Length: 278
Image (cartoon, rainbow, N blue to C red; front, side, top):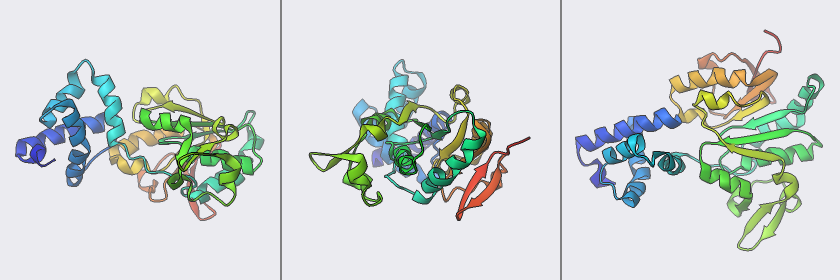
């Protein structure tokens, strides 16, 4: 990493590259985190035989193979920390209360979207919670920018670290044991979630989605600059059905952005609801 950042010019090139990454993916690295970005990119530059960040910038901007490289880069720079039953109270709230509240006003089954799902633990946790609640006919869509983690999600095989916080009995009930300390989700859970690649900051991709009654976009907005959040929130609100809820991470307050949604506190948790009328 040091040779890449040993001159002012190399740091300026990294800033140029940083801004291109933010433009394309929404992920932003502040000036204080440039060294972290450099560290993430160093191995990829070495694999490509590139000597400078400027070389990589030109590859991503103009090279004929840039589309394939963006797929690889997205896997490098995306944060994919997740596990089953993470921030479990909000999953329980949705499965035990919100879905039941939705049903009387819907002529179809409830639809739930998990944005930035990483390797699938969050939507699969929801699928299990809905099974426990006796809820049938709920459509679950999970999306992510990173093709690599989506492949892992579809495979639905996990190691002990991912399943360590599951409620008692769920591991045996919903998983099959595999050699090497691995666990495979049973088809009755895995088949309930559909996965697809989606870039949240590309409005044209969001236009192809249906409306949802619950949108989970947790621990995503904290990686975006404020202008990106301001662009994204109205798009998410448009994708909510009247009376639907947006759920963000516990540390991601939206109040300063004045979203077109109503603030609610339920069971000590903050969620945001689209008005039923107006």
